[in-house]
Length: 404
Image (cartoon, rainbow, N blue to C red; front, side, top):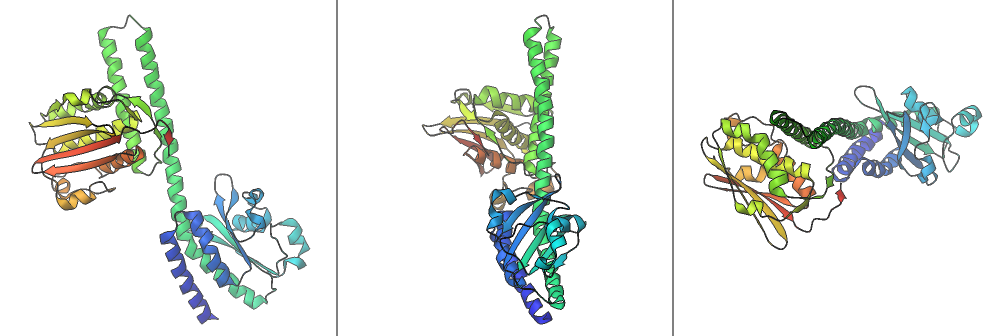
């Protein structure tokens, strides 16, 4: 039995590893995992429930049970209700040798099964902190001996410990993303309220002095900078990209606000700016203003960091019947071929950036890439000799809709 169990475990580990590399999400992984789980356990049916820690409920993530596929069974288990919920609340595995002979348990803990099982196995999935992430339930139509049942429940515990890292990693990532999105929403809502109040002040208070108007203008710029920073951090940590398209003039609504935010840094580096007439004459775009402002801010921020002091940053534009593009060029250290292939990857920093100890986390260009992909566009790099140019290309047919 020990040799057989070792073979079963080794096969299961190999199977789960392969499934994890191919699965597009946690639910798909768990659905595909049920077949080898039932095979290893010699079970006729199996189900996997995951824990909703906030609501203290279990929801059905995968099952071979036809009856449990109905929506009415998707989130019915609360901790302490049902055999599966009992295990989630207790944190200990459970074995019922013959459910039919246990009317007290059967009446107290109702389970949605489409046949009367002979033996019933439930084991929790545990993580290092001891937190219950979910439960795996297997049902057999045979009544097993106590010794055989003990070995089966041990095997199920091993199986759940193998699944735990995959469940924990995905759960932690989802919770982190939800937390970031919630904080981002709260911060952005506050900033929008402040900006709206200042705009109302400008339009209603005709007697404001020039000094007061300048201060309101500076506060607007500060809000834009904070909004840009908040959005940048949330995207870097995996926030889902939602694009709200609106007709936008690149020169007025994107470039000028970004340059206003970055002007003090350009002055400190003694950098000048050359803007082609093509930029002001470019067609309007159907884009998310805040996201494109963030992309342009990141490109200009990079240009300022890597430009040689006393040089200029060039901004140009062009369009045809299908596309519109904007380029940002600066004179500095050329980018190697190896860096060009990796520069848009998250966390990547070039050898030159590390050598010069340039501040940054290697996320700016990754964020630019995500934003452009969300707009069905692209960002490209051209590094020739000392001239470094990034180009943003937008399809002119991008529709005004919300995209996730």
